[in-house]
Amino acid sequence: MAVLRDLLPAYRIRLPTAQEKATKVSKEIRALRDYEALLLGHYQAFLKHCDASCQTGSGRYAAPHERAYGGTAATCLGELLCAHPHFNFRAHVLKILAAKAGCAAKEMRGPCCTSLENLFDADQQVWKVGGKRIGLQFVQVRLKSFFIPLNLKSFFLSIPS
Image (cartoon, rainbow, N blue to C red; front, side, top):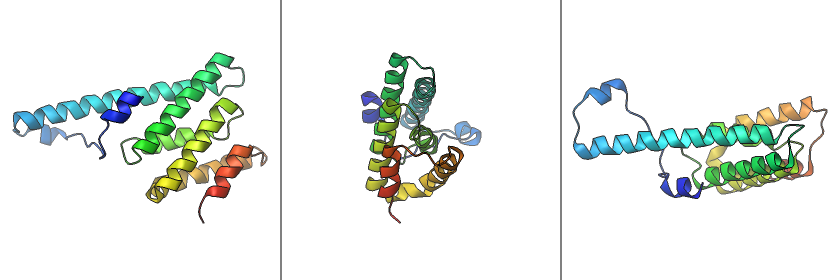
């Protein structure tokens, strides 16, 4: 996770279209495009792995080591999102963190709520994407008969109005 945090650029990577790939470009531009495509592929694979770990760790019958591994994956996702809030797949990472913020497992809920609080405190622009995800979280709260864990309550109270 620390390697990805250091390697990710501060801008969104846009992969070239088929027409752009067909045009002739310099060797440096081709090398940069190949590097960005490779970096984006590995980043997406890492996100899928973290998502699967969060799913496994938040299950009702998850073993303690699975819960700890899921909590670590949630922490990694939160730190990556806070370090690079405008990078690719941020909506997907927000969706994972918002869904797991109401999880019954403390190992999962704590890092998710902390990451969401830090993210929304640091960058108000994220509300453009995150507002919809938080709306989904409110729907999830209603489906759970209004049971809200303490961490999630403090997050909802920290949201600026």
